[in-house]
Length: 342
Image (cartoon, rainbow, N blue to C red; front, side, top):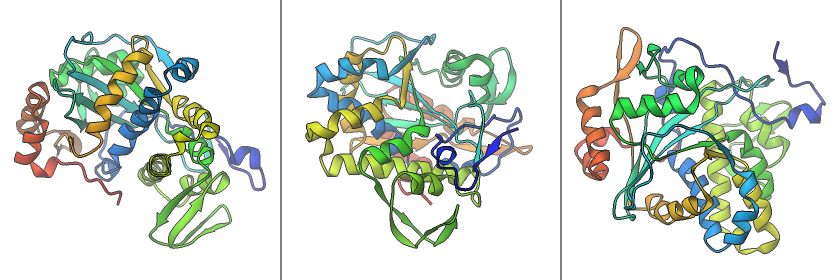
């Protein structure tokens, strides 16, 4: 049985946010709202971690053990050009107020694509509950590919689905979000409506969160799974924004702690070297700014299940392969991923 957070038990309250098992079925349960999360925050997490290493290469090598590397069968080796496609996933968020064993499921699935010029590109989010053909397992939710065969099967499934060769794999652990928020001295989050969680009163407007208050915010028992994801994304975005705008990485006293928190949130394929990450950072700086396009693969509901709108999604996959995601977004503005969290 999962454990609930006990009253007056700081140790339990400081447990990392855990992940929940993914159901074998793939009903559409509000993932359309969850997909509206700030995708830029995920990419920015990786960008900040490796951009910092551009001026701290020795330190990046020193922290190499912090970035977990796992064996993943990839669809394509890195090319000589700067064109690159990385499959990025995130860990799921567990039941609010509960702890238990982590899930091997995937909370978010997206393709980060750098164009051949190394200066432009885009991010394509694929709703994890979308029912697709998973090799050897029939039609099932895309996120179940990770459960059935780990990252390698997910890579194979997405490659087969999109026809886009995948060069690298990366996973972001959002359970580290609270740790990162603490490391930067707490973060400011705007809350639209006052509420109380675990005895703490959150007011409408800007709230400064750190330690237990960040945990209470993200694990409010009154909110849904989708809202838990949104709130973790809010914490992550606030932390990344603080790092960038306050230039915290320019302070040698805080740099190593921040890099420790950032790198400990990353898991990448075993072929993703530090130098590869640093090279990727140059492109990410542009993609996360005005040179990047963020879209979500279009879906529709058939017999109660979310499936891809193949007429439009086929055009999207072709756009990724031809470095024309921006042009696709111009033709299909409804697919552009919102940058604000509802």
